[in-house]
Image 1 (cartoon, rainbow, N blue to C red):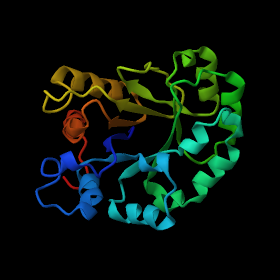
Image 2: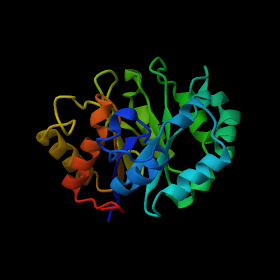
Image 3: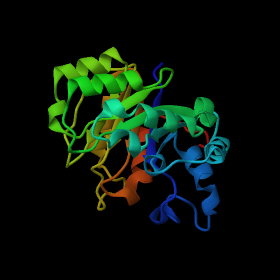
Image 4: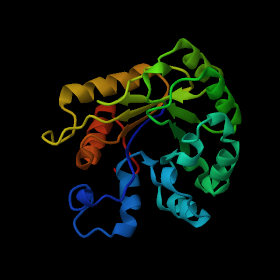
Length: 244
C-alpha cells in the first residue's frame, strides 16, 4: 500500500503554543509533540544555515521510528547563477550530518529561486550531481518549467516535482518519480482548519489518486492554521500517527 504522510513546516512557532501545543508545554519538547500528532515535518532551517551533527541526531532521537522528515536543501546550492556549479555545495550539505536521521529521512527539497527560468542543460547537469540513494524533489517557481523537456528530465532521474497550491507561483502537476510531494499554501485565517471541507476533500482525493507514496505539507498562507489543517487532512485520509 502507498504510504501517505501529512505534516507542517517546522515545529517552533509561537502562535502554535497553547493552540496546537498544550498550554505550558516545554518549547524544547515541541518536536516530540508534533511528531506524535503528525506523520511528517518539513525542516526549513536547513535552507538558511548548516546544522551541527548533534542537531540532526537530536531531531532523530526526538521522533518515533515511523516518522519522516523532509529537508529543505541549502540555499547555497540553489541560488548560484548556474546550478551545474553546485557540486561542492551539495557535497557540503550532505556532509553536515543529515544521515544521522537514518530511516527517518524522507525527501530532500530543492527550492529554486522565482527568477530562475528553465535551462535544460543546467538542470540536467544539476540532477547528475545529486547523490543517489535519496528521494529528491524540486520546486521550480518560474512558469518556463511548464515544459515537457523538464518533465522528461525529472522522470529520467526519478526527481519529484513539488505540487504547489500557491497564489504567487505556478502549480506544476507532474508525475515524474516513485513518490509525490505537495506544499499547500492557501490556508485562510477565517477557517478553523485553514482549508474548508471541500478543499480538504479535494486534497485527500488527490493524494489517494496519486497511488504512490506521498507527502503533503501545510506550509503557509495562514501559518497559524497549519497544524489544524494537517490534522484535518490526516483524518480525511484515515492516517493514525504514532501518538494517537
